[in-house]
Each structure stands twice: as C-alpha cells, then as structure tokens.
Amino acid sequence: MQHILDAITADDATSEDFASLALPESYRAAVVRKDEVEMFQGQESRDKDPRKSLHVDEVALPELGPGEVFVGVMASAINYNTVWTSIFEPVSTFGFLERYGRLSELTKRHDLPYHIVGSDLSGVVLRTGPGVTKWKPGDRVVAHCLSVELEAADGHDDTMMDPEQRIWGFETNFGGLAEVAMVKANQLMPKPEHLTWEEAASPGLVNCTAYRQLVSKNGGNMKQGDNVLIWGASGGLGGFATQYVLNGGGTPICVVSNEEKAEICRSMGAEHIINRSEENYRFWKDEHNQDPKEWLRFGRKIRELTGGEDIDIVFEHPGRETFGASVFVTRKGGTITTCASTSGYMHQYDNRYLWMNLKRIISSHFANYRESWEANRLVAQGKIHPTLSRTYSLDEVGQATLDVHRNAHQGKVGVLCLAPEEGMGVRNDEMRATHLEAINRFRGV
Image 1 (cartoon, rainbow, N blue to C red):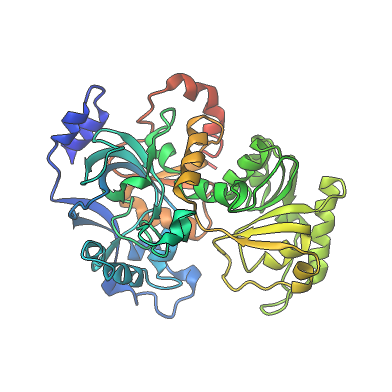
Image 2 (tube, rainbow, N blue to C red; image 1 turned 180 degrees about the horizontal axis):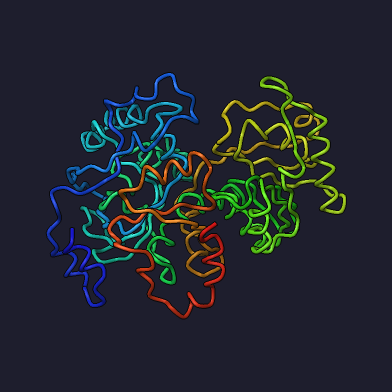
C-alpha cells in the first residue's frame, strides 16, 4: 500500500498516475467474523466489548462492478452502527449481507464470512468501474453511506424510499474502516479542502442525518425562529443539530449531561442549556412506568428559558428514555423527528398529548444523495464544522468503538487508515485559519 500512499501525499500526482497504480490483491480492514456472532451470548449490552469482536485482518480486494469505485481510505470514523455491528445487536449484520447477496450475481460479493465495517471515509479515488463518468482516479473525496439500487420506481422521488436502500458498511460489506473501500459512485462527494483527512471523514453519517432530520422537507423542515429541543446537543449527532439550528435562525434548547458539554454548546453560540445532571430529571419511575410530573417539570424549565414558549421541533435520538417527555413538551401542532434510539427502540408515550394536540412524529433515517451533498457543501463552505474530538489508528479500532459504546467520547471519534499521522490533507490553509477555532472546538474533550 506504500506506493498508493506515496501517490496520495505527492503534490504533483496526476489522474493518469493514479490510474496506472497497481492495486493490491489484499488490504487491511476492520472486520467482525461470522463464526463469532455468539461470542457475547448471555451478556448485557453494556458488558459486550468491541475489542474482542473487531479484528484488523488482511482481506481480499473484491471485484469492481459497474457504477462502483475503489477509494484509498486515508481516514474514517466510528458511528453507533459500528458499535451495533461489533456487539451483534439488535441482530447480527451477517443477515443483512446474506439477504443482499441473494439479490444478484453482483451482490453475492457482499455475502462473506467476514464483514468490513465503517460508514464514513475520506480518501482518494483509485479505480472506477464501467459507467462511472463523474469521478476519476486521483479525485479527493468523502463518501456518504446511502447505498441504493434504484431499479424500482419508489426511490426516484426520494432515494431513501428505494426498497433496496441500505447503509454502506452496516448493511453492505467493504466499508470505510479499511485501507481500501468499495462504494457506489453516487456515494462520493468532494473533500472539503480546508480540513485534514480525519476531520473531513468525521461529519459524514451524522452530518447528513442531522440535515435531513432537522432541515430537509423530508424531516423537520425547520424555519427561522423555531424553538428546537436537542437531546445530546454536544454529541456526534446533536453537535451538528445545534449548528444547523443556529445557522438557520432557530433557537436551540440544548440538553446535555454535564457542565463540560454545556460549555461546548455555549461556544457554538447556544444560550439555552439544560444540564440533566443538575436538574436530575427522572422520566421513569421504574422499568415499566414513566413519571408525567417529571415531563411537566421539564416543560416548565423549557418555558423558563424561552420566555414562555413551547418546542416547535424535537430532535430525538435517545429513544426510549426520553421519548415520552419529548412528545409532552412539543407545542400544539409541533413535530418530533426521531432516529437511532440509542437508549432503546421500544418507545412509550401518552398518545393523548400527541393526538389531541395535533403533533406529528416523523421518522428520519440517514439522508438521500441530494441532502447529503447539501450537508457536505455546508461543511466545505465553512458554515458547518466537524465535531472530531479524538483520533485512533486502525489497529486501535476496537478501543475507539468501545469509547463510543460506553459514551466515553464527545463529538465524533476518528480513525486513521492509510494516513500515517493526523494533520495531513489540507489544501486551503487560508480558509482553515479562518475557522480553526471552530474546527478544533471538540478536540481533546
């Protein structure tokens, strides 16, 4: 792989130079193994250790198909879907690969006894398959994680509605936590050139998800002046939501768990902060029963901050723990947008507060190509900034994933793949200098 890295780091390598590079027969990648899916049987989720299930193995380079691209991966990042894959919850992802493998002769390549994980990347195009015209070897790119076939009519208004919609690196193979990744050409977007490789890789999944869930007409359709409740407002997903609300003329009401996270929100420009550890909200009396009095107390706190106004949009992703409160505090006619459910998938809420007050629950899952492109464009313009806090090497991918699993991180956790060190890949130093404080806001937290 050294000759590929040399070409990527050279200032004068041409597209022809990249096209003539010999590709390796194999490469290093973070994988889970099919014969280990029962390894955590009987353990509680919190006790399952990704360091035991994630391996950095040498894997074979797959055959490149029509419309596909090989990318030399300089950096990637950890998302909750990698955590779920690594602990085999809620189901083993090998079921996804098996079903995808039955779709066609071409998709059989994904049904392997190992799963290469990762749904983010930044890097350089190495090869393009038949039919690819927009991208060429040598292009510096990032990738979004939407994989679609678009043979059915359903997806041609919104590609997220494609019956064969999948998340690359989670429901497909050959993901981004590797030295080489295989993606569809319509996953690629230009790399923001004021960012390092690890910074450019980190927004991907969460930035696009936040854009659709909050800004897009397919999600919250936020407008100026909206009061937006953001759970985990300084986290990997919430950190982008907070930026979008501030940039869009809304008022974020940021829910965090400690003062350090509150300071991050304030540094982004947010003024209304709810520190859950200080307020000591207990939305659940016990495992089976919620406490509406706590919803009411939470609502009073929101009105205290907003001057008596209720919430227009809730940016929901914790799920079970918070959903009842989210429905309760939303104004009449307001919207709860939901994804992920990191505290549990089985949501409970009092439907009287939804139905009688004409509130809406909108499900949101990643983003289509157009939404992803717009989200990446805002990063490239310096209007939205990465939330990268720490970066690991590929060999440390298990520890990086454990940090996210145990919520011992802040913002996004990056992973260097081909890049030998942090800080590489910047080509617009002047723009970087303008935004350096915002780029480094989450560093070391």
